[in-house]
Picture 1 (cartoon, rainbow, N blue to C red):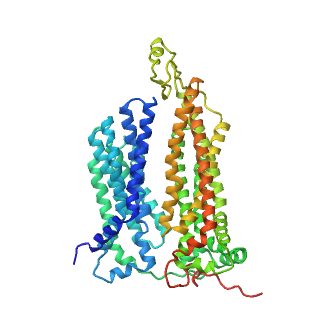
Picture 2: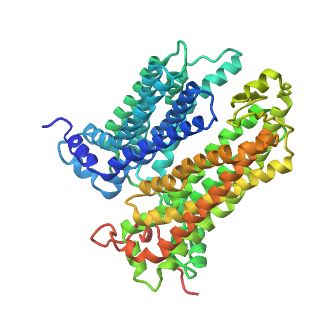
Picture 3: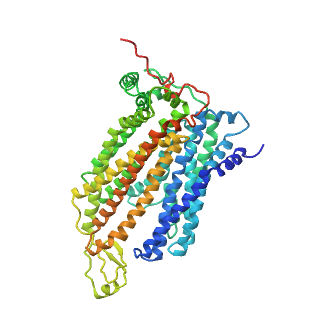
Length: 605
């Protein structure tokens, strides 16, 4: 028998996919645009030499590469095996002489090809930093190895979760939880032990973290890089071995336990008890059947409620403290929670239409008197019913926490920043050609001949002003979520599975616009508005406020464009897209309408 027979076939199929080709092109283009932006800022005077340019470009590209590598398992492997379970094709493979490692390694290599090619496409542009200076050859090669290690770690985590899971959305959430635990648990534990023992940070458990390995790759001096790489690979290969051992034993569908209220425990957690299902059906099915079908599940709403309450408790506990370090922790935690919310909203928005197309429910709905616009409005109202109340609470908590954190940060900077030194004749003479002037905590370079560039810290803004700025950012975040919902619905109608629909939604609505908006706002602020602000004696707060304002305006324009485009496509092409490929040829009773999930029949009164 041929060794690893599935691997060769999967590699041939993956190499011929258009997504494999476009992943390389897009990754190289993104790196090229970022590198060009750094060069533009240097040529116009906003920089401090090629050494700092090389360091900044290297840090930007490598951190973005780390984020992309760690998210590969979330979108590429977290549902690759569980999807085969749902479709019933995994059992056919084990009727042959294939073993668990044949299937696992075949899926691993097929799903890793796109991510690996994307990393390889970025490496030549990353190597330009060696010519600019500030980066050594050892740092370059160690960091490249750390990025490949992070990609392998992420893919193995997704495969492990997919081997023991059956549902796409739960597999994605479990993969995200496992990756967060793998990346952050070790460094956090070592930091807590060091604080409790009042000692310096000693990396012991941190060696298991791919993020810590990445940070040691670019550090100077003696660092435990090779030990960390060995520990990371040992854990990843152990997890891969467990996946190979578990897969032949977990593909069968297990018997479900029955609750006292009737039905399985999973059904009770997903849909609630008999009384709740009966009330929901009586209230919503006559109004819009799609509204009832799409909002029967209660666990997404409960998860978001729990997240909002945890965030609110964290902000309430920190409200009486003014330490910058504590609010810096909130900034990181709030950012992670916001990312989690965006990912969950994007996944839930596309999941209903993906499953409805696959099960044949779309065909049944289109044969009823319901119009395409009523189907779309039913899902939109269902998402609004499930997520609007907890999202309102979460956005309010995020607004209050971000406002207090920003006000605390500016107060701390204003209190600790020294007064700017008076200009000297030597300083004035050096400014005749445009040089770098360090003021308080900000470095500004100006090409304006004969001008004195002074950007002071200034007084801390009032809490009301800070609240208004964070309110604008919160409104932009709310608009992001609405755009994610509508674009996610369109991706659910046009994508093969839930993970692919989620990836496209996050990529097109969040990630790519983030690059474009960040680059555009930096160019507008630094090249057009900053010279005028410098001549007017601007402070750091107004510089930050201006950058945030430009970013918020561009983000709102982006979100409105995505919302209007997605609505138009859904209303005008719903029937055509739904009929293009509707899943299995034989029309079986869909899962959403199966007897196991159906509510009890209402007795006539």
